[in-house]
Image (tube, rainbow, N blue to C red; front, side):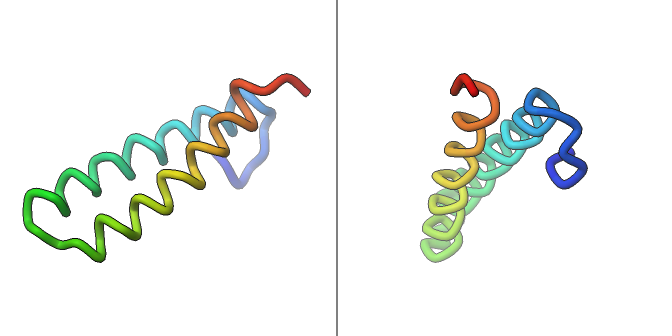
Length: 60
């Protein structure tokens, strides 16, 4: 969805899916005590959150 670039809405929805998966990975890492995985996905959450802002929230 993201790599096809079929428009702002489709790309933004793909980024929202990435945000959801980052939250799931952070939750799993927190439950297992895997701090590096949580940090890595925290960074990815920030990047994907910016993508959601860029493609779904911000006006052109």
